[in-house]
Amino acid sequence: MSATDHEYPPLAFVDIETTGSHFERDRITEVGIKSLIHNQVDTWESLINPQTGIPQNIQSLTGIRPEMVSKRPPFEDLAAEIAQELEGKIFVAHNARFDYGFLKASFKRVGIDFKPKVLCTVKLSRLLFPEQARHNLDTIISAHHLKMSSRHRALGDADLLLQFWRVCEAKFGCEPLLKAVNQLLGNASLPPNIDKELVDSIPEKPGCYIFYGENKAPLYIGKSISLRSRVMGHFQGALTLRKEMKLSLQVRDIDWIETSGELGALILESRLIKERMPSMNIKLRRSKDLCAWKLELDESGFLTPRLVGHRELDPGFQENLYGLFYSKREANAYLKGIAKKYRLCEAILGLEKRIEGKACFGYQVRQCGGACIGGSPIDLHNLQLKTALELFQVQMWPYAGPVAIKEAGHMHVIDRWRYLGTAINEEELYELADSGEGEFDLDIYKILKKALAGSFKNQVIPLAPKGSGKYL
Image 1 (tube, helix red, strand yellow):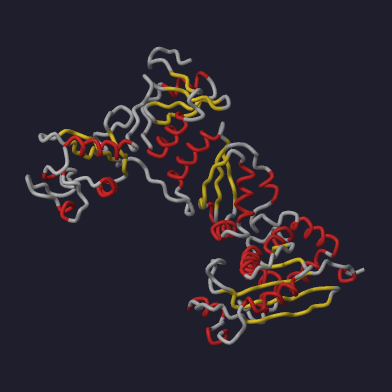
Image 2 (cartoon, one colour):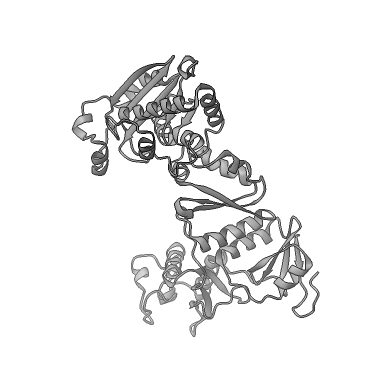
């Protein structure tokens, strides 16, 4: 009995062309569907008016030009017909998240809830032909000698997927092919290049995960108290969120590092992002050139801010520090901001040249309370400045020396807001506490400050002075 004597579930081989890759901003220009039911093939296709421009590079790729779609119906006029064409069928596409994500978003805009079973032919190719190095559509065309009619047009590419199905059918037979389909449908939310076994091996424990792209290049680093659930959250979100879709299409491998808990994961994430510079994370900056404001009394009795550069800076052991900024420009912008908000004098603050007895520019445009010409008491100006800066005061290190913060049997060793490492026994604790000064990192300072003011304030063990040989 041949494979074609068996009944497959209804299949819809789908391809779309669009004005770009952003399914909330860009629009569909063409839909092509090849349906396979009872071994009979039905065809549906239409150009669609995107009601927006088509970039020149997209025109060059697809051959779809504005004049070809200007008199065609918009998606909303065809939505019900397309939904009916796909109803009750397995949605089959190459890199299915792209086509499915676009159609789902387009249907949603017209009030149609679109939730088919989705089969990705990239995953099918990887499962059935693991010896192939790549599984993009051009590789599949070449490897299986598929016949191209119109590459990068919706119906032409949909027909290639049907041809690929026939190749799989002929090579493996009905039952193995159906088994493969059922296996993949059970993992429809996984990206095309990620195996279920890999995701299943990720623990439901705290830690950091690393998504890699081509050539093991780091794409994204994140943290969670439940690693596997968070990783799967990215992939499930890829069906509706453009950023998650972009990540899912690029990810080729996943790695993870377990930590003792949430605090350990937060610290590790901050360090890993700076070390590995993943392309899809917000770039965190190192803290080597930090500066802060310090208040000093001038000869007139005014408190004036002086910028303390990184060579003089020792956060945690210096009183009267405010801010912590990555650059002088950022520090000045912050000071200007509070001057405007509290109507402080920019001349007294050193942001513009001060001429004794003359009003500053801010007073002339009613942005200064007049302290520069005696129109506002010195004490009031000083109080307003201290009040404005108070929320951004750099906290003094509240302990006599290094401490250990307990988390699930591990101990994070900290000294003057510097993270020295995590110990799992007394010997490691001894080594870390004696290891010398760590580098001050602004992001880790913020993490530790919040932790010690919150749930970890009762998990702190002060360590004995260095050289005493006793740390617990």
